[in-house]
Image (cartoon, rainbow, N blue to C red; front, side, top):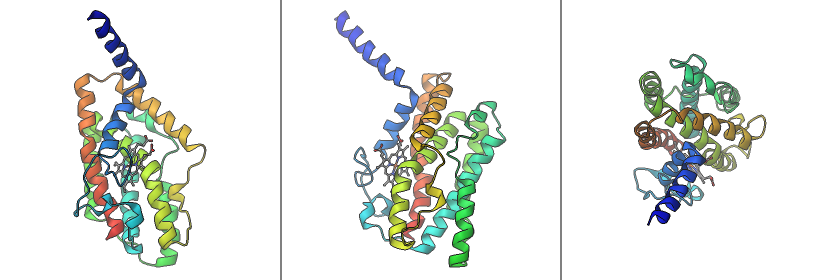
Length: 230
Ligand code: HEM
């Protein structure tokens, strides 16, 4: 009936009113395994040990150092891209205070004193940095997908991983990588607002393209995460 249709349209417009980031989040949450997050839908498999519950993780310090070095390369790359943007719209995403590059640099100085050998970036980090640079110049929707997933993953699962590794390997010392100045939930909300804003100018096809990129984001980040268990 017409009444039913208009009821449905009301609900739809309510969904739209919540903004595009909610759509990005729904897609991202499905890409988790059930062991990683309640809303996860992906099956665990042997090739991807990072899909196992954190309680079963056996991290190594060598592996964790590799992970931090590759993470630094990825954050350095993202933060340089927005500092020196190929498209002016990226400039909105400067100084979000979610930036991680300087903090990781500090952590690696401290860890170098303690453990001496800091590895060079691995092919996983190098490949991801290269890919981010490319899409930042030719695919805004894909770039914004990675930008969202990298910063938001770090604020959620990333922190849980940090706590776990700190317990097992670092005598519970919390690295700078897991500290933010100011209220993290407010900083995240500011970035959600900016992402919703930029996505308002996208067509439905462009939005779908952005959502479809989530899988690659998980693939690249999964390769780097897995280093912790190597
Ligand atoms: C959110 C865990 C890997 C992207 C979450 C949440 C959990 C979680 C528990 C939900 C937080 C909430 O209750 O709202 C994990 C664990 C991971 C992992 C344990 C690996 C061991 C990843 C990866 C990505 C990712 C590889 C993408 C690169 C996200 C995003 C959110 C999220 C975008 C939404 C955050 C928000 O809405 O604020 N993760 N995650 N996660 N995760 Fe992960």
